[in-house]
Image 1 (cartoon, rainbow, N blue to C red):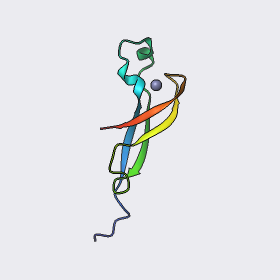
Image 2: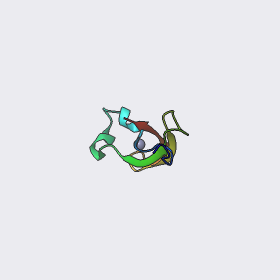
Image 3: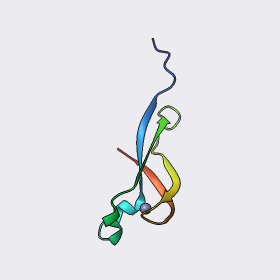
Image 4: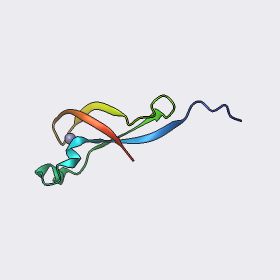
Length: 65
Ligand SMILES: [Zn+2]
């Protein structure tokens, strides 16, 4: 007991374009990545640059709850 391999949790990353609600991009839905992180090593919200098919570009994906 008490010897877990860190605090690995599943998180969801969403592109910033989700904020452009009036944009036509909306019809493509919100693109999300699912990944995991170690809560102990990364207590803050994760931000990763990934390709977003909605933006058709690389953009910042931020962790959401
Ligand atoms: Zn996007």
